[in-house]
Length: 608
Image (tube, rainbow, N blue to C red; front, side, top):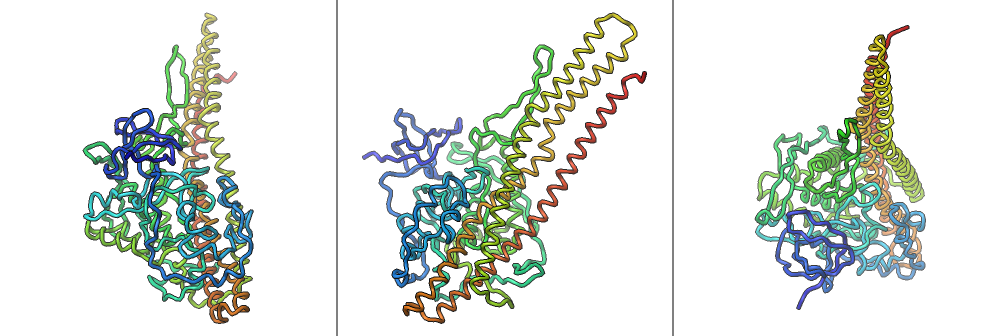
């Protein structure tokens, strides 16, 4: 019997890779599901056969998802008698705005219906829905070391594991589509992570389990609660991309060298290994720490600012400038360079975070010794039970008093307002910068070129007069025309020297800010749960000591949020100081070079 599958996302085949282009909604026939490496051979309705990423399709008779979680279950039925009417589907009606959940739901985009939030599901969703619309997911993609039959495992491990996660920079700025209202559908793969963070804050607030894992202290600093920072600032270098192949040359990939400053010994990683790290960090820390998305694995057609190439075409003895936006595949040289630059930025940001940089999984990624060391560490990381909201069980405020619920709520709302406002400001700057980039690489150079051409045409006219006393003037006019043509080229190339870095920094922050709705949503939901605790005490559902423990844990969550926001602010001040200095320094050099060229052109005219 033929196996059918429905295509979830558009996929454009890479020429020469035996791939098959498919479109969202298309039904295809699976001809070979044992290709391996995350690929399936399929045939479309036109009889064309080729390889398709298995993450892009959904088998019509897929097996139901079952969680492998080991977390102890909690009886939340005690909240059934205190359930307001279920929230509407406001989360799914606001397009790609990650902040929309807060505009429609006072509790931070989380339904107050606790009975609809059993352990193992995203808050406000039933367990059957959690996998398809869940919290930390991207709406489209084929990547990830946690996807399908892991290619890393395929090459190194004897036992293959299957798991699932989707990844992409899809969306407005590239990195904001990570959860809440944005998860439209997930791929066919079982959960690789046993303690998958699909639970609401009640799992932590009511937990009776002892805390597991390394303690994460929060101290009182000059600016408020702060994480414990290491004495030595970790960093790493992502460099030396090399193309490799597998499956007898049918598939290609790019491998990078990652060298940490702690060991100065490089380790090799492919993109999917970075994605595996991202998923592990998101699963473990995502409820407390915003984890920005990785850059896209592949660009298909949409020209990137970084890849705008200016070309010069000689036509009828005149110089014609035009923009060339070539198709960018996974292995286009400019794209590889851009992706490596963005991977470097992502890794540097992770290195600067005191909690993430010191975590076992991050240290494993940077400095595994050999294949055995990697396999052991990888499997240990995937069995970690302290994930999702349970990460708060490892946080210990050192010498800090418990906060009352009103103060916790005020802090949460303060951070919510700021991050929303900054998100708007960053998007505005990206829009303006994008428009300026287009002008600098489009109409503005052409204007300078037209001025230069007009001066040279006038010089030709003057030369045809036959008057012997104007050679100095015509030569000066010609030189002035060439000066303006030089300026046209300088204007076209300048965005790569200054605006590029400003735009990249803002893109990073747009992605980071896009993570905050999920993180703040966890805190808002916790506040609502604690508020309901009074009713439960009154009806004898929980004891006063249990209610007190819930409030204390909400206070711990608040200290974690404050420490994270203080870390965010210190990085923001550093990053924008640095990038604005760099931008203005390059602007000064640019205009000084133009001024020098104009002075030279001016000096060739005779003073009368």
